[in-house]
Amino acid sequence: MTRPRSRLRVGAASLMGAGIACLLAEGLLRVHNPLPSSVVRNRVVLHVNNRIEVPHEDGRTTLFTTNSLGFRGPEPPSDFAEALTMVAVGGSTTEGFVSDDASTWPHQLGDLLRSEFPSIWVNNAGISGHSTRGHLILLDDYLAVLKPKIAVFLVGINDIGNTDEPSAFEPSYNFLYNVTDPGWRQWLITLAFRSEVIQAAVTVNRRLRATRLGVVYDEGLDLHRVPERVISADAIRARVEDTRTRLIPPYVRRLEFLLARTRSLGIWPIVVTQPVLYGAGRDPVTGVRLDTLKVGGESNGLEMAAVIAEYNRALLATAKQHGILAVDLARQMPRRSDLYVDFIHFNDAGNARVASIVSDAITPALLDTFSTFARDAARDTQR
Image (tube, rainbow, N blue to C red; front, side, top):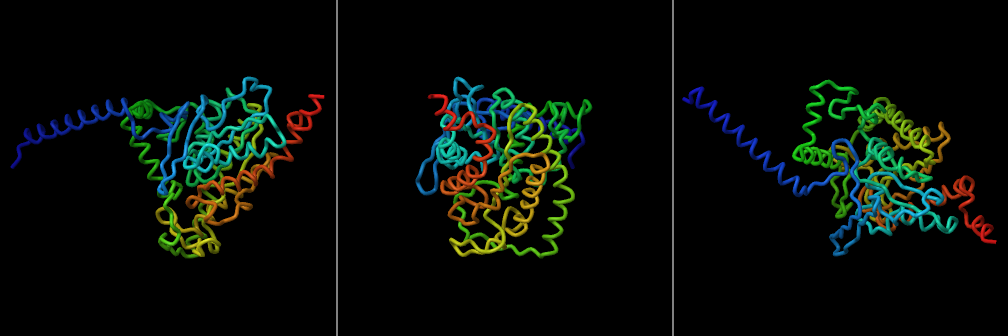
């Protein structure tokens, strides 16, 4: 029988061992963190002048680089304030990590717009995993200083399940407790998040959540091998109703806050709906049914398509109400597997199609609003 004093010694030794292990891990992670995050202590961190060679299963290697701003694309022009400048903001479907720099849809959009606006500058500020909350922090911390003339927001997929209110965008907000002006206990725990160990744990948790939602890259996706998951019509209706009543109202309020802040900075916002591969019907390339494919942890194609459709409808309605240009990419983008890397991320051909759809949709409005930068205006100036 173990004596109480012996049990105390064993417990104390265990706690000391765990403490030493945590300190060692903290030191190692401060030297090199193999789990870098774009969000540290609730702030966006941009990695500038980055160069990553991304290997692929088929033997290809693509190049992911960032400029001195931490965005993908050319360096900003020296006469930035006088130039026509555009930044694409979104999550991984904007960032396009697995595509070459020049193959992402923001880069290809810039190439297409250059036929009408010869000197336009377009950068890709997409960051994997970011939702409206991350976009607002990016806007306040970086774009408010840079002040591009146009911001294109491709949003929706990473907001699924998020119930944050716009108060989450304020500096006094504590993301651990979802409150403003928290007490000392909440701030003490927030202070603990300065630890690299805790940051690494948060990063792992975020990636696990993304996996459950089915919004991580899956280059090896073979539709023929995806398990089938059948969900009843009643269960899908209940999920959609919950989304519509519980999740969409705070999403709309976050959108309104984000877009109002964008306008207040003198930046012209454009919003784009999020397309997905899954949904009703069959893939015209493989013939595989897209409705009963298992998506994420417990959902299927039909249910998740219905959920993202609610977010897309809310985005379009919000844009219309506030007079903001919207591109319904989800409606115009063909649902076929030869345009996607996986269920939501575009391949090179998909990026080209996205760029074409967005360019066609926004060029007339850009010609009206920014006519002085148009090709014809430039010719008149030269005469």
